Image 1: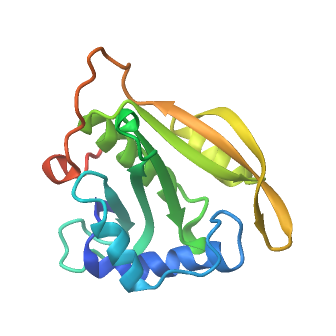
Image 2 (image 1 turned 135 degrees about the horizontal axis):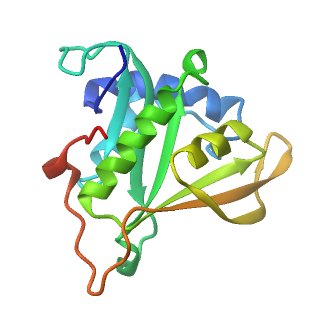
Image 3 (image 1 turned 90 degrees about the vertical axis):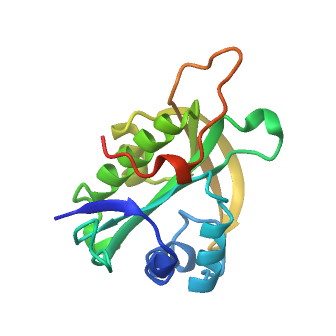
Length: 190
């Protein structure tokens, strides 16, 4: 049984382990050194209760240990300037053993539902190209291609394009409504 829940500080080691292969041998991340559990805990804490970090586990959502973490997803500030505060950048990473089994889609849909409940208006995803798996995943939850940054990352001895995918969460209103903190909303499951 797959359970979706808010990530907890004790999940940081599992999250770091899922992320590390994408850093070390892949191009999905443009980091070149994999962050450890302490660094992941710090990133999670930096969300200040506004931006969600959620995990998919192979256990019950209310279990003390939550079962093994299979995937994680989070939202972050899209850009620094205040006018961007209604949009978020999103990402999802899945263990290689569960890739293609629907866990990423289930988790991503929960992240989107949570962001919608919070009141964010746009979700933006940056995908290192080529990455057919990630494109299919994003498009399966409503993202559409918005553009490409050509040759903006250099990793593993080659230049990499980054595709930008965008998903409307709410039709923007005037004046806009301030997003609610994740700490007030919690994980929303479709």
